[in-house]
Image (cartoon, rainbow, N blue to C red):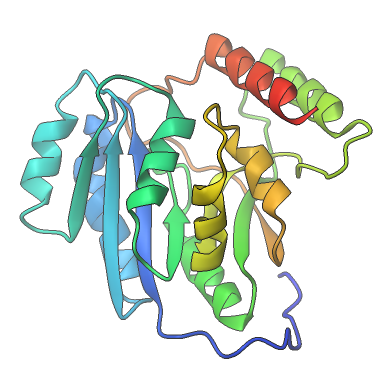
Length: 236
């Protein structure tokens, strides 16, 4: 359990109005179950909540499922013209989100919904950003594990700031963090670097990713290398 801040000198947090940004690329098989489960989780934690689903150029029936679920949930649907990648999809969702706190979460059930309550509690106690850190990569292939380790070594070698190793996009951020991220002028956005660069009061929460409920990850070796190249050229 992370330490609770004694006092940061901030005024008490207002009632939570939470925006949940969900980037999705060919996740139709998961969305029909995931979005209602997400809504059931967050509506018990916030006085108001919205789900911002960003369709990152999917080739499945994501659009049809969004239209169906939009009649049942407070769902806002953004459809990108093609597959721009997760960084662009998250940026589009953050630009649209209107809550005083924003949750970034994947649509494949690998980010535990049970952790959201702890993130919300940390936000209420004064933290501006609570993020998940993968505690165990044993389920990943050897190439990806070693590649990830090498990437973080190169990123953090003699760097002016450190990108937390194994930290992902699963995080809850205060409105002021989101506003700063949205104001940054970068067009090729390496979000893990931007989260660390903006600073603010942050806390890490270790977790073990759950199994995907359906389908296979589209984040292959090619995409991993492209993201690593983007990060290295943007932040070194």
